[in-house]
Amino acid sequence: MNIFSFFGKLFGGESTAQDGHLPLKINFNSTVTFDINPILSAMTHGAMIDVVLDDLRMLNVKSISSMTIEGMENKKIHRFYFNKEGDKKRLFLQVLSDSNNVDSIDEILFCSSATEPPTGEEDILFFLGDNQSGVGEPSYRFSRDDLYTFLPSNEVNKRLAVTGDDGVEYSRVNAEQDFMPAFTGKETVIFDAYGTTGESRQILNLMPHSRALQDTLFEELIVAFWVTSSHNGNDIAIEDQLPLAEYIFAIKLEKTNIKVI
Image 1 (cartoon, rainbow, N blue to C red):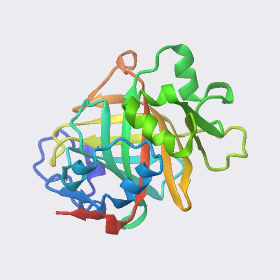
Image 2 (cartoon, helix red, strand yellow; image 1 turned 180 degrees about the vertical axis):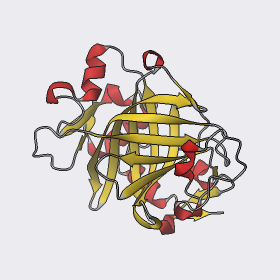
Image 3 (cartoon, rainbow, N blue to C red; image 1 turned 90 degrees about the horizontal axis):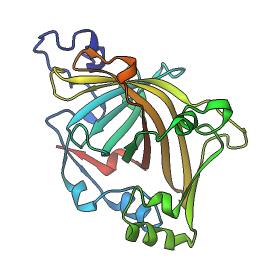
Image 4 (tube, helix red, strand yellow; image 1 turned 180 degrees about the horizontal axis):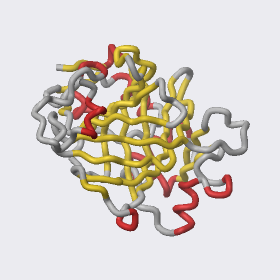
């Protein structure tokens, strides 16, 4: 059974495991280890991804999700989260594959992210891409002070010293276009193998960006804006849904960089 037909049956008392037939054969019993070389190389060349390299030698899956994006019905994104529910910072593996064949993988990203609530109406409008500004513009720039939000100052300074710049800038695909509406969709998450606990998230906006580090080495940035619309099968009233902005820094990996035990 595909785990993400599960929401119609979630919390219905079924005892069938819901974490089978997923990309890379990962499930809740999996221990995932990574070849640190691609991530170390990216960090050495100034990537802002936030991870302790020693931790990559053994990570356990804490939750699993499937994401559908409007206009991309033939593709599905799976995420394997390595942090506990509610953590502000998250580590996860993101896999893009064909909707009907999880073994046909287009892209694998190792991701670190930080979430924060918008600080006011202006912030909300920015992340909604209101009036063709904000998320959806050709580029997204972080100053040195901005980056201190995501990494300790000594790490930020060390990585910026590689390029000698005082910040970093990521560009989206088709950067020559003044504004591009962001993607929307839905993420369905389960916190246990049987889907007895989980939540549904509405993706209000999601926009990928990237920047070159050296030669063919790139760091990805995904800016996302979303709300949790239900938890453990119970809908959350709209007035109680807290929108969250998320900044996801990612490095592309190959299957050979990942071992699932």
